[in-house]
Image (cartoon, rainbow, N blue to C red; front, side, top):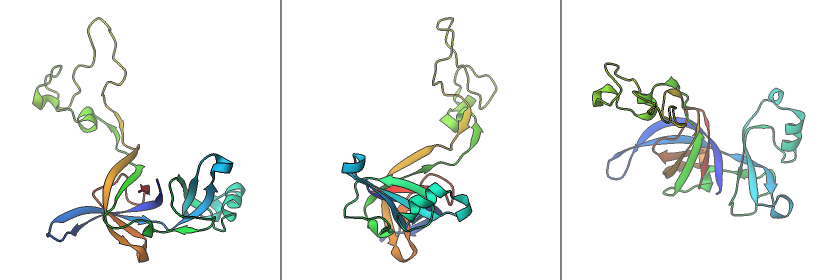
Length: 205
């Protein structure tokens, strides 16, 4: 699937033609530079490697500098491969937010906000003692019983328990594109996307 690399700017809301207030997310999408072209003959598949957001020279190394120099660009912070691009792209070409059109649907993936160590109510949606689940007496947000009987006398793998939450790659599918602003490289999609402000995301058609 073709796509772009972007950065989450934040959330806002728009009014549609019926006056309904729609929550939406603003993404700075591109421009991305084609830093490598994968071909069937050489690599066994067709794809484009895109780079986004300039990196400071002191943060790069000789190998990366040489790789990006072939495309005639500076080192980039984020590099992602996309398949399914239409058209003939060459090294150094720029792919902009005009790849997308208003009304179409996209998939956005990124790393979700890290929430640290959380209990079962927040992490898995347990009801707590208010729903009078077994194994609890007067501890409102406790997990309750986790074990079985004397057989198998162990806790099964995958048991939903407290633990570290968030900080995982998440993909949100079928978000409608509400607005494309080419002069500012902005893409406005309906709903929320993973991650905090300024986190990198990939947008796929």
